[in-house]
Image (cartoon, rainbow, N blue to C red; front, side, top):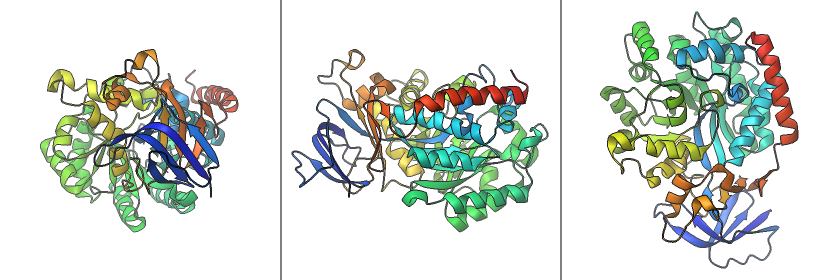
Length: 444
């Protein structure tokens, strides 16, 4: 048994009472076993002095594309469909095994450094096993899956799939990786969006999701042009169509959901569908601003995600929290999205989306030890006297304030030094990989 004792910290628990306490935390193997003042275990393999530090639950990002991290800076200043057709799809089609691996490692290193401990990741069509290898080695908690695309005239040839092959490859990956490392890695079926998927594929994804009891992760209602295409092809709006196919249920995670009508909101609420709000991506692609205050009033499950590096340029949850709060205030008023609501979306809201609210998302005895230790003793976070700690985190803190990150009781970063991702290897390999992909895609 490995025992870690964290001493004298401010602990933002995110439990039902919203308790914020000063004291110690004991971690045994992967679980929190005690929280309180003056914990004195018979032994501790490691003691972390956290005096004047703040412990928070690890962030849970419910929409990420690790395969796109290499494309950072390669899709700037475009709207969604042009961004996909001109840049992202050609680059994804050019990926090889090595580039997928280092793209994933590059993204994971950034995520861990900024306090994210769990992600819902959508890969590309090919080489997804290498992303899973990066996830396994890095220690991050993840739901991931290969993207599924069996329809579309303007899709590069290398991304065009046969329906049967797409389904079989997905099942093969699921049977290899789902439940890996005592459940740290889980599989999620990942049809890209309605435009690129046949009805046959989507219906079978519904069946397989039910059979294996795993999540389905897809995009919906991100862009008005996308919605027009879906309506022209199906006679229905996105969420109505997904409900028609039987996909709208508590296993479904929908990224974006900017342009929902009242019927779609009602379906999402009644079926228990989870929405991943990605404010940074939505603003950069000029897609719009999701109606998150109304969704929360309807008790819709809303969480946060940074999306991908080429439509956001970073994977920083501090940035997403701040944007999620600020973009609503001019229209809905200064109290529409307060710091507490946004922080819940980033923590326990994400845990609810991935079906792990009883395991992660808050710091409580018996839960997994997924957490970040912040050093908020700096000019940009002071004065601290009589300031709500969650307000300091959402409105003032940055990713540079994350000092140490633990996932599953394992220290994956300590004192800003990554333990599971080798920066000296990943950064040069990332440059070599994108150089190769740009040449292959003829985009340089």
